[in-house]
Image 1 (cartoon, rainbow, N blue to C red):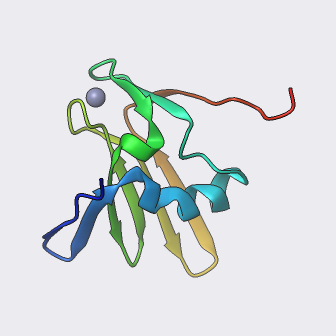
Image 2: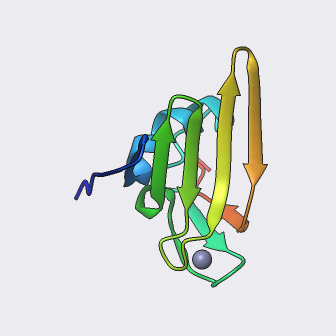
Length: 96
Ligand SMILES: [Zn+2]
């Protein structure tokens, strides 16, 4: 399932690899959350998005059209989250 390919200094993997970053931001496991793309209307679990990781953070790309869904950057104590073509994120709340 892991489709790892090295392009430049970034590692391109699937969204599972971004799980730790997302856990830091959202405080819960977001890999099963379903993300919709504003550009192409593709909806899939974040685990199925294309992720590019480097030392500065993670970029999640839509597998449907390649647009950036969101970018998370960390510089020292400063965390930056940039929303791209991510138009909707939904997940199941356990115990509800
Ligand atoms: Zn898309």
